[in-house]
Length: 305
Ligand code: PSU
Ligand code: MN
Image 1 (cartoon, protein in one colour):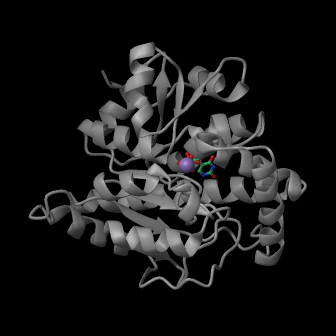
Image 2 (cartoon, rainbow, N blue to C red):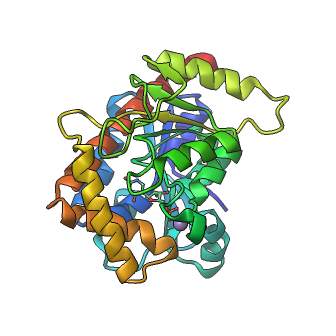
C-alpha cells in the first residue's frame, strides 16, 4: 500500500537520517515554475545537511514516500489535476487512483507510517481568523497531537489567528519549541508578540527533548512536537505590512465566497499579489531554512537511537 523509494528505504534500514517534505506547498502553495525549483532546492538543503529527503504524495492512488523527479515535475507544472489531500482525503484518493499533494496533516501521517520521524514545511495550518463562526481549524493541529513526528516550521501561516492556534496546540498537548527564538514566529515575520515557554539553541537540544518524548511510552501515544524557526531576517517582512495585506486578502476571500480547503491556497496567492511577489521570496527562503534545520536535527537524532 505504501511505496517507499529505494534510497529512503535503505537509509531507514541503516538507521541513517531521513527528512519528510510535503507536496501541498508544491501543487497548491506556490506558482509554477518557482514551486518546481523550490521542491528540488528543499531536497538539496536536506542532503547538504547530511540527511536523505523524502517528498511525500499520492501517485495514481499510491501513497509514496520519496517522489521521483518526474513525479515532482507532474505535481508542480499544473498540466494534470493534483488534489489537495488532508488526512481524511487519503483513503478516497487511494480508492479512486488519484494524484494528490499531501498537506502537513497527511504528510505527517504517511511519514510516520513509513518510519520517518522528522518533517519540514513552511508554516503549519491552524485556527483561521473568524473560526468562532466558521469552525475552520486545520486538521494539521489534530495530526500533530496524535502522530509521533517532529515538524520544523516557521510557526503557523500568518493569515491565521496565531494566539488561538497556540492555545489550541496547548489544548492538544503539543510541545512548541523555538529554535534560537523566544517568540512564536509569524511565518513572514520574525516576531508575533507571542512568547514561547521553551527555547533551544542547537539541534542536539531538540534531539534530546524529542528522544525524551518518544521514550514516554507510558503515555499511550507520544504525539508530535513543533519546532519553530523564524524566517531569515534579511527576507522577513514587517508585521504591519503583512497585516495590511492579510486584511485585504481576507476581504477578497469573503467577497469570492472561498471556503474549506480552498481558503489557504487562495490566501497565499492573494498575499503574493498584495505584496507584489515579496511574500513568495520570503516563503521560499524560510522553506529552505526549515529543510536545512530539519536535516541537522535528523542527523542529531541518530545519536539517540
Ligand atoms: N506552508 C507553506 N505553504 C503551503 C502550506 C504550508 O509555506 O501551501 C500548506 C500545508 O500543506 C498545510 C496547508 O498543511 O497549507 C494547510 O491547509 P488547511 O489550512 O486547508 O488545513
Ligand atoms: Mn481549513
